[in-house]
Length: 391
Image 1 (tube, rainbow, N blue to C red):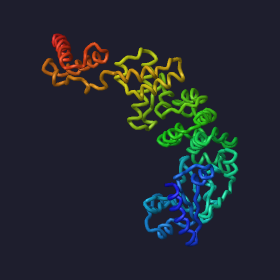
Image 2 (image 1 turned 120 degrees about the horizontal axis):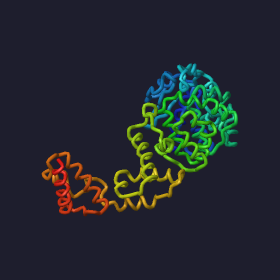
Image 3 (image 1 turned 30 degrees about the vertical axis):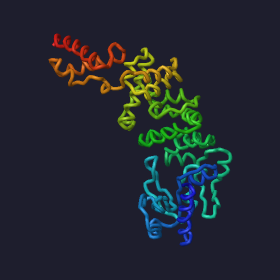
Image 4 (image 1 turned 45 degrees about the horizontal axis):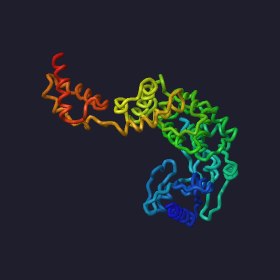
């Protein structure tokens, strides 16, 4: 697959260069190739203008024409072909207001984030390395291009990208770049939290995660995002990969609340974060029972147990949890051998049906009654008689 992608990419380079333009593979693809790892992220930069690119290829889409990007399709594979550009004023710490197109490769490379991402490779395999990116790769350094303070002021998300690359590649952040990250970390608060969440989620999946946690601590990210201060403090010396939901639950526990207006998670993610935090409360204060297990998913129960056992005075109950779920008598009210329709004729008020089912669920889980229709009908009738007398 990768070989065919490179082959198709070279077809685009050849057509552009045969037509008198410059064209290069750029960015992450060149970096990863030098690192000896495969990358399907093949981007192409050229001094051909967007209209010229569109005219040259039969199958294109104007996916980012305003910013110079035309997607060229070869055999159903899409390649982003972007005109060299010079970014204009950045006003939101994320994107330029507008761009000017350029015919000079250096103009395009200097606006990128890190030296290792400012490499270009021509159709013959020769690498253009204006900012000594290859040297930094060899030295395992993440270095911002030119003035690091300017780079992070342009796009504050680059701070998180630096952390992600450190966690991915096990690289060190160059000293001036690290100081600029610390000096501009407050700008992360200016970004849409959707972008921050997405980047944090990627960071948490990296293999050298301890390095990423330590960088978060080094630049005082917990002071910018107070909700994450405890999580960063506790994680910074570990190699434990946690999910984004665990990360925030650890930050919240035991008393903070998630501002869902600010942190724009999906409804499911919000539910999982709050549930993990809630389970942590339950596990730390109560004996684990089948009834508790029934009320939560096994995955979230294990996620909460993981956090408690690593970072608080709490005995790991992973084996007990797994065994408990394995032997639950029922996993849902639908597993009961009795239905609401069976109970309805027994009660004076329909709302009593729900109360009876709740009691039956608990008694089945605690093995006070077998999950068999005859036994459940008998118990349901006894409970119904009590409720009818009260009503």
